[in-house]
Amino acid sequence: MAIDVNKLRGRRSTDRWNRVSMGDLFERIKWGDPKRMVLRAWEGAYESPENAALTATRADEIANRYANAVRTAGIGEDRVVMMICENSSEAILAKIGLAKAGVTIAPVNPNLSDEVLEQLVELCEPAAIVCDSDCADRAMRLASKTGAPVLHQIRIATRDVPLKTFGEFVANASAAEPDVEIHGDDIWELLFTSGSASTPKAVMVSHTNTMFAALSFNGVGMIGLDYESDFVMCSFLPIIYHVGDALIYNTIMSGGMAVIGRRMNARLIAEAIDKEKVSCLWGGAPQAIDAITAEFEKDPSLASASLKTVIFGWAPMNPQVHAKARRYLGRQVKFIEIIGQTEVVCSHRFWIEKHHDLFLRTAPQENYVGQPHGLLAARISGAAGEAIPPGDPTVGEAAYRSPALMAGYYRKPQDTRDALRGGWFHGGDAFKWGEDGQRILADRFKDIVKTGGESVTCIRVEAILGAHPSVLKAAIVGLPHDRWGEAVTAFVVSKPGAAVDENELSELARQRLAPFEHPKRYVFVEALPETVGGKVQKHILRRDYTNLYTENQ
Image (cartoon, rainbow, N blue to C red; front, side, top):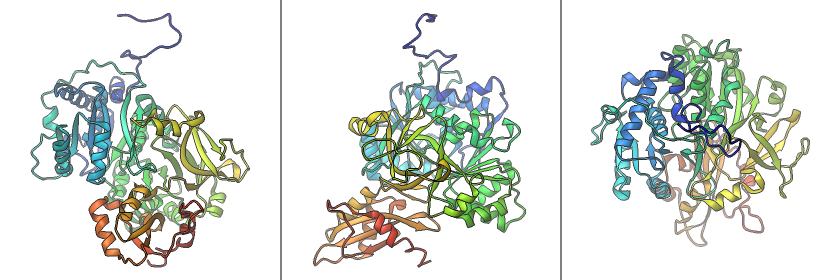
């Protein structure tokens, strides 16, 4: 065994005893606390009841079996496996198993249209596909076009699918740790982001990136707790194909237990908080927090005394929603808004209770997102790339440096150079300085609409609506909505002498777009507000139509 004890620079730590690998997530824990419960999957979020509650030892054993089954299937290091899966304990075990095998995971949102999925397959060229049973038909269609086999299903739905189940796939595989060289800079995951282009970009996420991103949430999750073992994180939001997975890994690494659900369901989340003594909730949009609060209001038998922290994002919280949540979830709860990106999930954090007066005066018209975590260098850059100093009210672009930052956009060298120009990552969000050194998210440069926990790329929807023969131009804007957070809203200009109605555009959307991308309303206008260069001034549309859904609810 050769061990280099002379070189001080240019080292590559791939030794089993000190490497950085997400595949070691459960293995590190089992030697010290083998019976510790690390993962609890709520009803509907597991294939086998045996995987509804997992200790570190059992989770690591199954992940080893999965890694060896993948290698037996002929999929080696440096290959990609695409996952078309929602939340389940087996999907998490598959990701950790693939990491052990040195295989890169490309998890995709199952709600994407077939057209986009085909583009993502073309980009990452997967060696194989893994899917949930209710996505099996789509996965097999992709497989027939690409030649990439479907390894197995995760059998959540009770339907007949001619594929091995997760349990069958790992049944005869060895439980021994696979002998694979892994380095922290290896890309273990490709996470897809809506970005500003019609096709999502694949963000290259290394083991080290995820490790730092996960550890950056330590302070958030432990607020109000006496011991690490009291830490119980709950999330029913997407974690398989979303950077929210860092919160789950943080919980497990920090000594706690993660509770996951299949998808957003306010009643089931409330029951999980009660039964599992949840201490920290990643709830998503303020509207989701309000829905969960309503369950406690309706059912006094549900207890929330264990809850210490509620994390939310995507939009500012209305003070009335906050006051109601405090009333029914408990005065002990601290509320924190976070904002990050797929490229750098290490986030800004705004603690409402710490800045309560500021919150009451400014929310929701100003979206205060607080200050960056200590692992995140975050400056506000002016048009010429200069740093805008604190106190200057000029709106600029947020620029970041962090060990939790992506390696680049897979097979997109120019996009990567553009994003990392000047030695900083430019994410496209517009920030400005607020009071007390806090930052305000002023707008989204890339105009992504956050609706019901999903991200909608405006350019893609605009392009499809604009393909209608009678449409001259279409602009997509997110407008405030009580249920969706932001509602996808289409502003449409018809060609001279042509006529188009909402039914025709709705049918086009149904054919070409995922359900969450469908506009909630079509507004027909004679012209769009534009700059001299022809760029639509979306801030004017947001201003003039901000009450569109409020007035009609």
